[in-house]
Length: 455
Image 1 (spheres, helix red, strand yellow):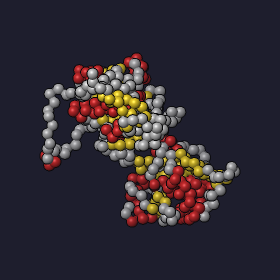
Image 2 (cartoon, one colour):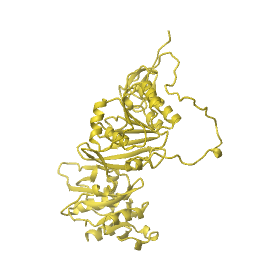
Image 3 (cartoon, one colour):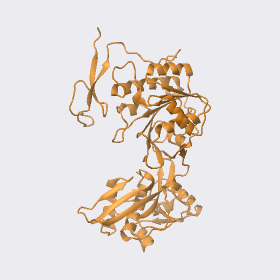
Image 4 (cartoon, one colour):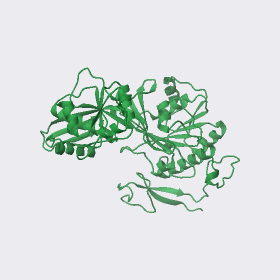
């Protein structure tokens, strides 16, 4: 009788150990090791085998045709943007997000929009009737979209050979089960083996495959970390379930920019693409309030105007609080220190709360000047005019530093009707201000900005 081989895997990061460990040496988590069968003694084989497969051979780099493969352009322009222009044949895409955020709706909407292609939508979580009910709410029809409710990978590959789809969508990778592994669905061994089988199919058949993945309570993709390394693209679908807007963010992309995002609005009939996100990221107000500033930022290749909200109040409960939503707390601490040291503002005894409107998470240093201006506006209780926006980084000496792609930021601000934008004076040497319909104010120090805004 063949000997059964087992191993212990960390359910958090996928670390492999021949024996049980109390604490994972890779991720540091406690009591996460589970014993799983890695081999039942039988000779392992791949479930996917392409008929009449041509044996690959090495080729000189100079002999390889570098022409870019054609892409499958979907009806969803936001999805095309985050992928870098559309679906690449043979690519493996992983889409993660919280439960109930709308991952299945997004993928079903994508499948119904590809009317000129055979689509296979594999679901291991919902029945055919549930998928049909969701499809009836979406105002898109596709007579070439097949639905399969199955979790066994060997059965799925048999249906793929019969249907010969152009795109495969699997919901979700954690529900699939391979007969080559004896452990249960969702385990580290099953996720790795199922993903490896699907990757072989995608690369050998040139069919793009989209995998939906679960995420942990910490916000990272569930399963072994190797899953993210295997796929070509990792997308994160995020947002507040109690708000209507959703953000599709690129985490990894071998075929395009890894900092793109797409914005959707969740409606009763599905997800609506938001072509001009600056309009939703800037709230409409009937009255002017202190502590609000508009920043000109770049996310991927897309210029955006976002609203920075600050609230500064006296700390009445001991240690002053520093809280930020959508902005790096450590960078907020640094900017507060710059304002106190270089600007003379006594913020050490103040509670400071910062919020990026719209639920966006921002890493662009070009919003530094807007953050500082909104904090001073709230601290002094003075209003920043709605027609003013900012696009510059702030250094530790209080100097205004230049940022990349400033002309795209200025053009976006002018298109949205802003009358003045503050940038670093170093940019004035390289841009032609007469080409823009907006007043461009070049500054070198924080004091110049505050003097012009607040007097």
